[in-house]
Length: 388
Image 1 (cartoon, rainbow, N blue to C red):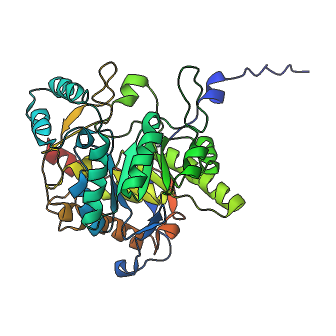
Image 2 (image 1 turned 45 degrees about the vertical axis):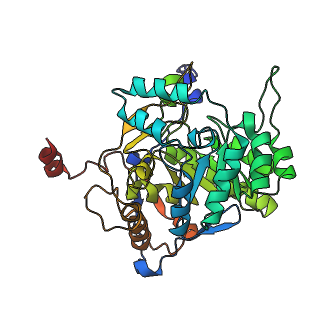
């Protein structure tokens, strides 16, 4: 009798799984296509119907009150950071100018760290929300868990429409013996406005947050161009896999409760193709930072920086130069003056959905995807050589 070899357990196989980002997957056309004019890009977030599934990130260089109004009028949405420069200073423009004029990212970080020592002022939070509402905008604001209770009360009193509690990593259960732990269930139950929560890359964490009343879940830890969380802390999951996992949790939760919780892929997208893949992965909307920082109307003067860049002890963001700037309307709706997919993002998403036979965001969730790590270079030798 031949003795069978003993099979050894592979710890790596048990602990590691393959995860995928936008550059490693492709969308597969099916048997049906539709006219782009038939595609409906509308989605709903926190009870608000958006004409386009595009949301500007709560970053000082991206969204101030005026930018939020512009995004609303274009059919999208923009969150303004309640812990940023606009709630610490009546006029943040001089500080933004110093950040933009700094000779290095390190010098810019030092300027931000110093600027963020000024206290947050409740009257400036109220004034910001009032300014957005007075111009017909949706007043969507964001804060961190440590300040959520106080800022929620101030924002609600001022008439805010949407409230985002955003942290580096969001979970339904936080262990601490030194600070008061935020109960999302208490917050959502006590407020008169929808509470969105971010960020996570875990389906199980998202599922628990939905049970605690989250009106939407933001997906993404460290993928943004101006964020260095993955380098500094080593945490994160590529966005396609993270979105698929959280979308599966959403569908599971909806089947059990009949309450649909939108999923928002946050960060890591630059082109129309990236956005199409995020929606196909299960996102109901996308949140963009640096692509919108490139707008002439954005306050960052051609720069962007991570929300954790001002940290005086462990910065997890950096200042980056955006490069070519265009009107917000061109970035969203075209016409595109470049060939690399960073303009006319709405048109690109519409065209992609039409080619895939998806007439709605919901139908886009069901298109076929394949793992295709060579998709960005296949057959592109002439393009690559032309860039050298």
